[in-house]
Image (cartoon, rainbow, N blue to C red; front, side):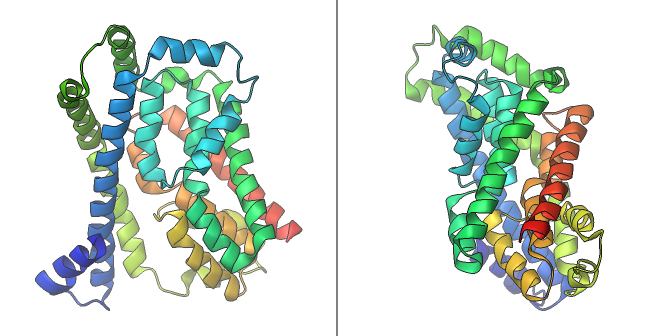
Length: 319
């Protein structure tokens, strides 16, 4: 439905040719803006509603109690793997978890894994590459989230989260325990808070999507095949670098990965490209900048990017 609306607006109402560079770019921008806007609205409202009932101090105590026996990051990565969200729609959940009292490292484990692994993407992977490659990819995504979330959590980076996130968390901790309001009584405040988050990050999302739309419409079709061939020893880091300005979810980028492999690009290089597109996109960085200070954002992108490059080389060697 959203794609049909974008078709009507760009190709019908605006009269832009579907085969033109501008037509492809504008269609990408309008469609992704509608899709992400809808997802952001739904997810922020849902997380706001959940957090309005969530006893923050009890959650903190439960995580600190050791009942998970050190598996908090693995649980968070596993939860990320079963949620069908792209990187941009995972961010409201990430912010909601922080506001709900979940430690930064645990929420980062979710944020890393969620866009990389989901059941729809894995089903496509099995059909295109077989179950062995699919298992390797899924395990890599979950291990990546678990290990990097744990490592980043150990660095004490919580002080680089923007103050407004912690302020909401503190206010909610004081209010939730004694909050006896009904669902309908909670909705106005939940909606105000959710829309505040959406409007706050909207400029960053639009800026990132504009860059992605330009690449989508104007970068030549054979550009990636030219520079990412197996003969280039720098193909893996180059593929990750080229992927960052782009934006797509895992399900949308898998057919692209299959076409790259069919043109002779090594599977590990193509998979690293896919991981960077879905897990390190510029729109994601723009949105996270609203909740993270520059140092934390750089640490997050740097560690995930280096890890994806390492996995790409490992996949090329193993496959």
